[in-house]
Image (cartoon, rainbow, N blue to C red; front, side, top):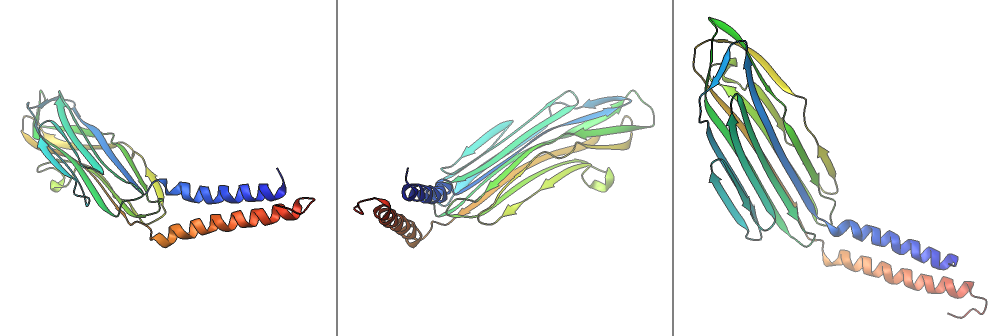
Length: 260
């Protein structure tokens, strides 16, 4: 390969590399799941069945919309977004999971939003122990949040993940366990967030007393894309044309007979 052709080949690769990055526009994926365990020196008794309430919603400005609320799991799916929520309780363990995703193609001009919720509520008490006992609440949230606006129309992305566990009348009605992360980015950015450290808290509770609890999980995703103006595409096409002309001229100069 001559130097002229090599130069032209590398230049075209650079242009293709730029346009290849345009294959995606805005992608936001949010997922959160966790199990809450209650343990004590006494016997932990969670009254079954535990109330489970889930909700999922997905919508976009292309007209896509879907929403669902059911027990113990549901999902929603629009043209450019989807979400889900689920919850369950077994023994002394409460489990919930939620997702919210947005995927905007590079030719989309607008916004999409999705949300998945899960809420578990009920009562528990500590038996087999007199007076006050130490009760430990623990959770290890599994969280994944990825945001990408590196596509041609990528303008903004938002992800929201929150988990709270509350026991009425304990810790001044504030959550005993809590995790919140809500990153947002502008155009041309890519970020990923993973799981936090395990959560734990120990409280002194009265034995043989009924306590009301609530475990809540919420995942949300939002993305905005604006289609580039036609002038942007024309600039790229013009660049290809100039490269082709330049390549032919360099080739003529390097050929022994001087002809193209």
